Length: 136
Image: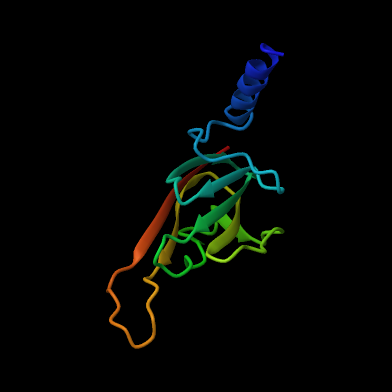
């Protein structure tokens, strides 16, 4: 049993960064819900292959509204798709994308401060940026 656990962990790491998937810098996780990769607000760089699907899951920082819906800078490379698990919890924003051709795009989203009505509100906007490189 002592040798089985390290072997399973090593196998999962190798599966996540195998040549067939390409290395996603091992920050994005393999998604179990029909997506090949999942990126969160902590991820800022992902590499994927044409035909793979990316799920973006953003949790709003404390004191802000939900993130705006993430958008691709070039939809001919990374096209928005319907997320079949798009029932998100409060303060969580979900988006799905499919890689259509090789290239590099930026996925962006914004969050504004959460302010009470009639109170002074700080003037800032949080920006989330994910660089996505799509290869053959």
